[in-house]
Amino acid sequence: MTHIPPRPDYPPYYASPPEPTVHVHLTQEEPQEPGWDFSWLQLGRNVQALAISLVTAPWWAAALRDVLEKQGAEGAWFMGWAAFGAALLFDHARQRLLTRVLVWTSLLGAAGALPVVSELVHVMTGSAS
Image (tube, rainbow, N blue to C red; front, side, top):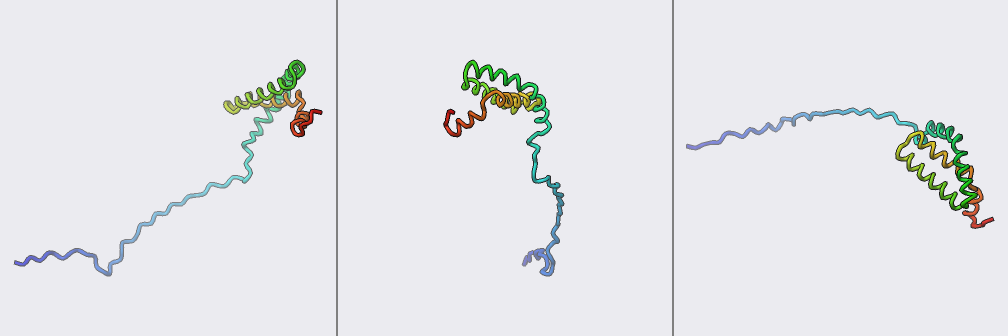
C-alpha cells in the first residue's frame, strides 16, 4: 500500500517566461512660450489708466500743494505716500481699471506737486540746500 503522490506540475525547463505586456504612453509636449513674458506689465490697463490719470492727477497735485503750503513738507509727503499706499492696496485687492487709475493719479499728482528731486538729493547727500 504504497501511496505515491502525484507528480508536481512544474513547467518544463525549456519553457520561456511569459512575454511581458508593454504599455506605451505618448505625451505631446506643449509648445514653449517665448522666453520673455511681459504679460505681468498689463500694458493695456496701464495705458488706459495713465490716459485717465492725466486728467485727474492735477487735482490731486493741487490738493498736495495746498497741504505743502499750509502744513509743511512732512504732512504733504505723508499724505502723498499714504494715498499711494492705499491705492496700491485697493488695486491689489480689486484689480479694476478704477483702482489702477487711483494708483497712477496718486503717483503722478505727488510727482507734480512735491519737490521730488530736491528731496531725493537731501536723502542721498544729507544736505538741506
